[in-house]
Length: 375
Image (cartoon, rainbow, N blue to C red; front, side):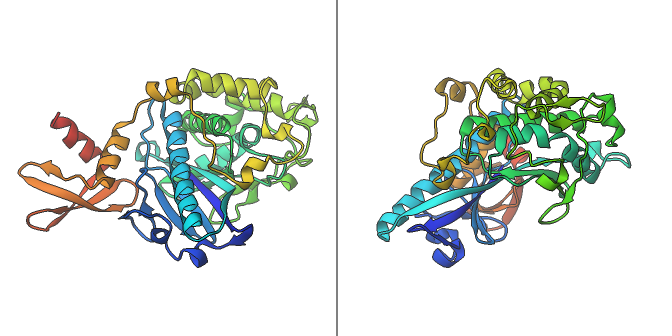
């Protein structure tokens, strides 16, 4: 998951490139370099400046039970770390800084095993652009939101939405998107007929727009009969292809129903209950508020996690390996000892042999296997 933030210094919007030049000037401890201009945060994720915003990202997360919880927790850990570093920088420079939430991107790999003439990342993305908007709007959007998008990006698919300052709602968003993604991924084909086969309701009119950056599609207010971000989510004002009129909440619940098993498997029962409560109107969506909550304008200060769930979903194997890498702990492989030099993309680490200085690349699965073998 990636999250983008706009930087304000003394309540003036600033480009982080102009203020810090590089993330190394913001974070007070040495960071492992990554591909391009990004760096590995000591908290496990990545930080980089991207066209005027500060962007933080989680490390890669295994698709397994609880992964939606782990991914969301990881993102908020990166946000909290950057927020604390920004507070330190503010003290040193006698100013005030805040992070205004901008967007969140949920990225999923597209496995080669699913690739065929009828199943491509582009076709998957197009299908998801017809499925995800209604439920994602209720879980992640607010009164000032403008779009929900999907972008196919070769070996992965990315879902874009507003940043959600409420951690439980972001967890619900992540759980829903992950469950839907994995459910659709295993459909026999990625054509529009699958929507009818699986009982997915379809709004009319429904016109996808081009994504603002790169390839992909967005659902904007102009895509529908009215603005879904300002309309009452409880009113049955949306016409479906079968002639019914339904509320946004009813549509979201109906869309989600075929994917409940996957959502439950990849998040947890509490997340499913929260999603159900939001769609039933028993829990608040940010669309229930008359305006965008103030929490958007100063993100990262208050983060509450249920301690029991933290204990239940312990660190994954990838997380443990990445934390060992960024701690610069030497890793013994055979008779050689290696030390991490840099991250190469999201999946590989470049190591240096501490004796011969020869470089060697290991992927995360290699490192998990090698470290587990030593136990």
